[in-house]
Length: 201
Image (tube, rainbow, N blue to C red):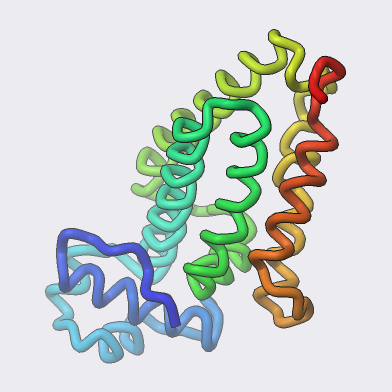
């Protein structure tokens, strides 16, 4: 099992690791905060110092996992300012992150969004805004240059990351046997073919 992203607080990380393992094994509803506390070997005081409730713990897992994914995706775009390289790198990052954080990705997918973020709302809002702003700026620059073709704005994600996201779900469920690295290369090429502007070779 891949460990979740590290935190600066060892006790907090141990609680998050135990919660993730419990949620993946039994689901969110079937777990109790007491079961998670015992699995983590944490005291009641230590657990409630970091998290208000089971829902707060789940929200923290969701927020930190999504933030780690987004920071990695933005780093890929910054490292690959060229249009073809950037499009392909984002696809590869998506699948690589899912396969390197398979339990966390499974948990995030199973949540289907953060419905009750509570005090974690602000922790999700700022990274989301930064992430999508960075993506829009990167896309806009290459759309203006003609390197990426103009389509309705809400279709870019579907063409770019959508197929990789769907494949990731099948990989996690074991329904795809193709090595993810090979699949990533093929989907990266397909994404570039879908988004390539008329002026590109």
